[in-house]
Image 1 (cartoon, rainbow, N blue to C red):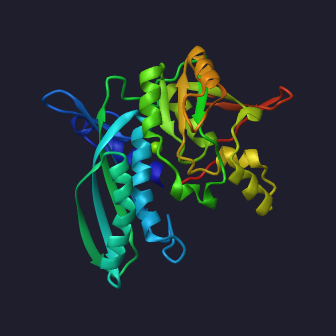
Image 2: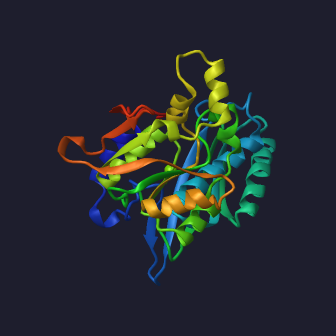
Length: 310
Ligand SMILES: [Mg+2]
C-alpha cells in the first residue's frame, strides 16, 4: 500500500515541489537559500501496529520513535541537530503517558546532541500515535545515498542481524557516530539503515543503484537473538534466515570499495563490528536489482527479497 501511494504521490507532485530524494531515500535533502543543506526525515509509530502499550513501556516507545529517525539520518551519514515531536494521545491518562514518552525521548536526544525544537499534542478517543521529525546537517563527506553503489563494491554491514523482536527493535543504538566516522575514514559509495531485513533492503539498494548483488550466506553476521528466536519459533527458519529477513536491525548497510572494506574488517575500529557479506555485481536488462545467495559450497540461487513490510 505504501509503495503504491508513494508512486501516486510522485506522479501527482509538480516537479518544482519535489525535493531531491524526498520520496526515495532514507531522508530528504533540502537546499538552503544561503547555501548548506539540511536532511529531514519523519516517522510515525501507532499503537496496535508498531507497539502495544499493554506490553511495551512508554519510555521505550518514545525512545524508539526518535531512534528510528536517528537511524535514517545515520543511513545518510548526516549529523542530527533538532527534532519535532507530535503526539495524539488517548483521552484517558494522556498527560501521564506523554510525560513517560518524553522520559524515553529526552535521554536519547541528549546523547545525540538533538534539540527538541517543537511539536504538537492532541487528545482523542483513539489509540496513541507518536510522530517524530528529525533534521540533520550534511557533513563535508555526505550525504550518503542509496543509489551510489558500484559493481565490485563490497557489501558491508555493522553489528549482527536478526531476532530483533526479542528486544533489539526497541533498544538498538542508532549508528550515527559509526556512520559519521566511516564517512570520514573510508570511501563510502552508498548507505541505508536495515529496517526491513538485509534481503529486502539490499534489494532496494540494488534497485536504486541499478546493480545486482551476491550475498555469501556463511558470512552473514547472525545475532544470538536470531538463534534464540529460531530455536523457539518452529517455522522451519534457520538463524541465518532470520538474520536475512526479520527486519528492525537498524544496522548500516554500506557499499564501499573492497580495499577499504577489507582494511576496516581487519582493523575493526568500531565496537559494533563490521562484516563484509558479499559484493555488488553489474546487472543487465531483466536482471536489474537481482540479488543472489551463495552457500558455503559455492552453489548459487536467487535471494528472495522477503522481509518486514510496513
Ligand atoms: Mg531507513
